[in-house]
Length: 289
Image (cartoon, rainbow, N blue to C red):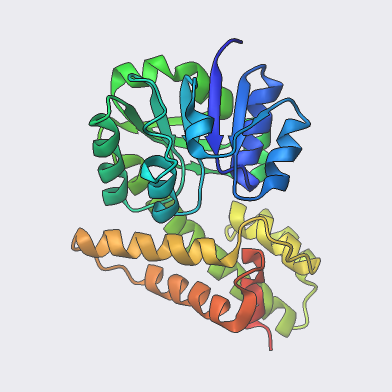
């Protein structure tokens, strides 16, 4: 494998993707504000980059896996931004969960520099990023998709082509994450109720997992909550951000839901209660006495 991939943002998800590509024989140059994350990948065979521009130098494609639009703006178009270092015709995968209008703005800025944007938000968590089984919701032109198909398939066994319009990947991700937030809030409330009723929460979750109340995120997070494991894989603040972005998109489309605002308020309350640095399984703490 002779292709070089730059990855900016190698935390839980980006680091998993980088390790996956290294396992598959790709050459990876990693950049992150936390040096220890980069060094962990260097030990696996990656090269270290001191800036987004350095990560992009000579890269066949660049993966941006940061937290929000502000960080993505800095990575691409800041003083040491990657956009100026990529060769014309190269592609940028935009993987964070951000507003559709921000994706559109970044795509336009990249196009003006002769670069292609791939709107590619991801879902599935760090373990699935690491083994290549995560979901990727892709919106880009047909030619760009075909040119980067090998890379996309290497990092995602669940590759969904949702359209060609930049922003449609983000829209799909926001719909998914709004439902994830609703499901998780419901699961946290149900497990807290089971505890209050004197039921064994683990046994109750066993029943739910084989019955009509089952959801993947509910099972994943509530298993951790029952064990008292709130070490952050996905922080409370992420679903607070994502459900908020989904509600913004809904308002812009003239849509008013009933459950989304309630779920968003739950994550906001959890963050305000001091759980913002914990795993989003900590939502259950809101419902416990």
